[in-house]
Structure formats: C-alpha cells, structure tokens
Length: 126
Image (tube, rainbow, N blue to C red; front, side, top):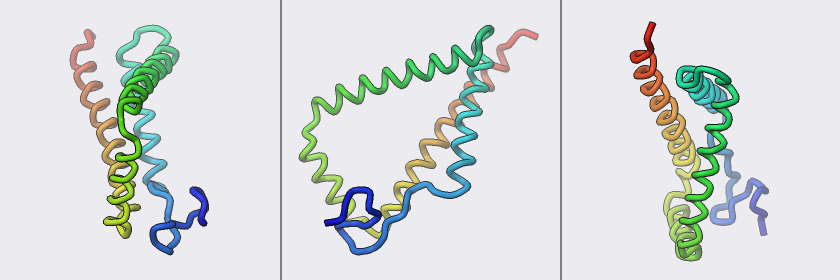
C-alpha cells in the first residue's frame, strides 16, 4: 500500500507531481508577500512591519477559528467520499486543478492588495 507522501497514487498507478512547483510558484508567492507588506506600510503610520505581522497573525487566527467551526459541523466522511469521487473522475487533471486554484488564490490576494493600495495612495494627504 502506497503511503500518503510516497509520490505514488493509489487510485492510478502513475507518479504524482507536486502542485505549484517551479519558478512561477516562487515569484507569485514573493509578489503576494511583498504586496501584503506594501499595503501594511501604506495603512500603518508607525511600527509598520510589526503591525502588519500582527494583522496577518490575527487574520490567520480568525480563519483558523472559522475553519474549526465549519469542520466541526461537517460530515467529514461524506465530504471525503465526494473528494475521492472527484479525484477518480478527474485523475488525469489533478495537478492542473491544484495549480489552477493555487494561482487563482495568489492572484486574488495580489489584485486585492493592489486595489486596496491604490485607494490608500489615492487618499493619502501630501
């Protein structure tokens, strides 16, 4: 039986690939982090890095609590079966979908921070 991290898929007998590998993953991650800290520098007047990191910590804490609430009220067996059925039906495109949704998330964060930064710069008194 192949292990979870062995690189072999139990559903199909081919090697799986890590989603989001390559230079684009590094570049988009760096772009996301730099845009978040740019936004933090535009919002906070003093202690920009500290307040940005604390804000990221608080946002992560809130999302963790929300995720815990949702997962506590979810039938995990039925959810797992739906995911397994989806993987079986889309086994040849799993890497594509993981990359696609990862890139969509990174693009939403960067675009959201860019729009928020633009409005913040527009409202700054010179």
